[in-house]
Length: 293
Image 1 (cartoon, helix red, strand yellow):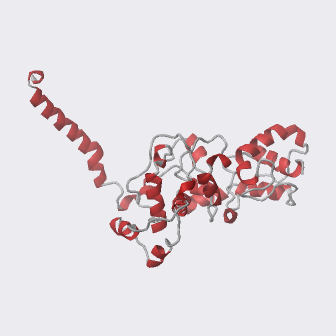
Image 2 (cartoon, one colour):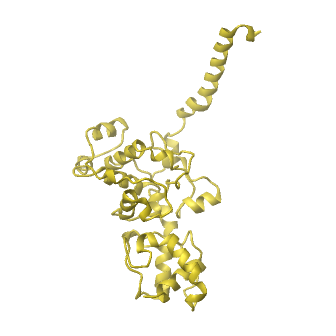
Image 3 (tube, helix red, strand yellow):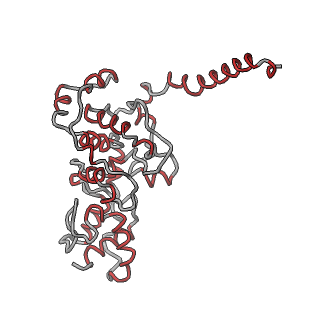
């Protein structure tokens, strides 16, 4: 007759809840994020990246962005950016993990693969004015991150997390801004595993002959594809912005196809071979070569 003795009922209910919590939430930490989960290529965060991760949490980025690519083919195609679905070993150095469940914004687990720019120019422009690169975005501006980075506790954080670091790593923080730190963190996400980079760059064309000879027949599709994938870096009218002007390109159609498909990592040009099929890439090439100069 527990219902007649509320004190005993409450105590027993608490015990049952705690047993369930221990089994499902506490005990698993004894065997996750251990040596068996580690992937050799995945490295701990540097001091600058760790500061960026802390800023990411401070600003609540994880409230809108998840960091886990599920095993669903649609997830991999949309957020893998040439890589695969997320593995537990990718998060072995995350304390706490930022998997999240809400996708008000896109998943960022592999965002470093999508924008490999070593200077982080796209990320900087996006953080300062999101709508300048993604017009439909409802993300607020984070231009205020262009202020000196507080490094008071940087070394203490690295020691507490048992992450390796050098004095050079700490010296690299001098003169850095909060913007530099969060960009360094975003650029790392998803890039540690070499096979992902290889897959992202291995989208080679099956044919090097453009099936479209008349821009008029593909103009509508080509313009739509350009605005969705290229305008943020090359300008709405192909006049150039973060990337070079695409008016009157001297490259051959075959070379343009390879560039769009495979990207140019050194210049921050992402590969579109994993997200656009050959027909769509050829339409873009046709627009670049035959569009009004």
